[in-house]
Amino acid sequence: MQHELIARARDWLSDDPDPDTRQELTDLIEAGAGDELAARFAGTLQFGTAGLRAELGAGPMRMNRAVVIRAAAGLASYLNRQRPRPAQDTRQAGGGQPGPGLVVIGYDARHRSADFARDTAAVMVGAGLRAVLLPRPLPTPVLAFAIRHLGAVAGVEVTASHNPPRDNGYKVYLGDGVAGTASRGGSQIVPPADAEIAAEIAAVASVHAVPRPEAGWEIAGEDVVEAYLERAVSVLTEGSPRAVRVVYTPLHGVGRQTLTAAFARAGFPAPTVVAEQAEPDPDFPTVAFPNPEEPGAMDLAFATAHATAADAAPDLVIANDPDADRCAVAVPAPEEPAGWRMLRGDEVGALLAAHLVRTGRAGRGGQGTTDATFATTIVSSSLLSRIAATAGVPYAETLTGFKWLARVDGVRYAYEEALGYCVDPTGVRDKDGITAALLVAELAAGLRGEGRTLVELLDELALAHGLHATDQLSVRVEDLSVIAAAMERLRAQPPTDLAGLPVTSAQDLSQGSEALPPTDGLRYHLAGGAGTGVETARVIVRPSGTEPKLKCYLEVVLPVAAPDALPAARARAREVLAAVKRDLAAAAGI
Image 1 (tube, helix red, strand yellow):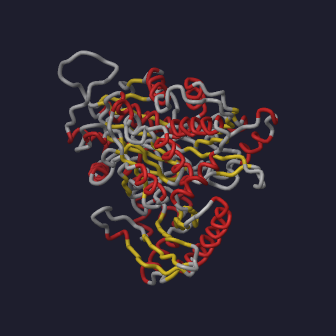
Image 2: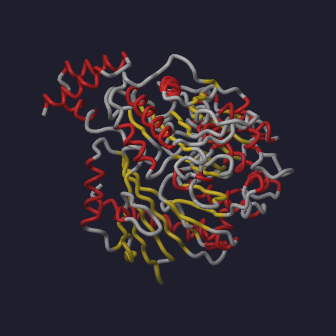
Image 3: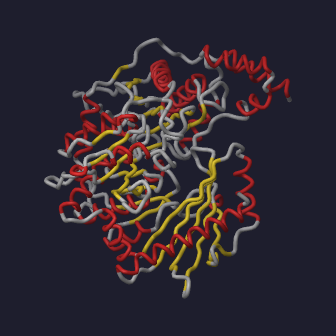
């Protein structure tokens, strides 16, 4: 086995175009690092929730130039086999026969992102396609917008989003008309396209054999960014209030220039930017993890808010993750140790839905479309379904990830609990932390003008639809077998009750259903009843598609008869959620 492993490593080494990873792999071979080599050659990276994503390093289970060139070659082969007829580039005029299909490529400011983007452009040109690189590191939603704006047959974004500094990733989008995408073009790949592209990647015999010219691709102008900004501000209601004070952090990512430009164009006061996190830095030096959901990630933003003069105290703290496709929101909370409370993704998702309903935009999409459906994922709160039902708009649920949400027929608004919101699916068929921030600011400004707050609106939603309290049990592991063992244990011995609430149904999502394709996950519905104070509860357990985590999503719904009953309902919800966490951890053995 060791001899075979070394032979595979040497074969990879001979085909690696990068001197840095060649040296890294050489050192591992010479050191006889069997366990490390086994991990790196345990298979090949597969498309997950957000494309390819892994730690940087040598070998087929890491992100490196060899893996990227193979992925790009496989995508190019797939596109050429599809023989797509590209849409007209919106920057050009004239008729005639369509030229080569256009692939637009974006990238963030992580280690090696620019290299991977240039390799992708070279491969596309070498395969007879037309490649356009975005002009600089930019938010992922700008790439998603550019696919449709430029009439591209595909898009690639080099990013690992909110993962640790040592990671990078590769997201693939298909344009309109490719493989039956129709009006869903500009969204990430899903089955069967992901498997078909993976088969083309596997068929790449040698990296050295992939044509990679030294030139031939184009660099997009700033007009693409200008077009995105113009589209972004169109999500707002003309003449709506804009008086709101915001502290903003891009968490060392690429969001600052785009978000501040969007706020200026929309007429909002300039946000106060967290100075220590304002510039892109691939090492993310001020945070343990560059994810606004992680403990400590927002500390500098809260400190900046506290340092603001009392007469200019901020109304909101807003954060983007490093590629700015997510949006985190915090509100003043004097009772909290930090003086601020992070809103959960489910809370922001409900607030944005309520705002769209309230402003009369729930039943119409952007720029004249009639799209009306509200959509979320099975791990997100069920509150959106009640808001949609009351407003009389269609509702849909999908598997986790915007690659599924973006494909909902007639989607008008979509969100997932992991701080992802799509408020303009006609323009950007993916989550967009810039437009979400604009809409949150508009909502907060409008409420401020009425002497109200986001928290008070959340209370109103609880009174109208029941208190929907959510929480998460998330376990990060070094050994992925821990996750597999937990899932196996739950499948073999499903819990019969959690927190004293009986489990009324236990569904293995790997079996699939008429409504959902198969996925590795488990779903439990729990009954409330007299004496429990609980109407219903729900638990979903799944391995993360982007990180080495087991994630358990919890929701309890409690009826609330009057405003003065809210504090007791919230306390009861916290109690039940804590008990569900405890019992579920015991059942899973984690």
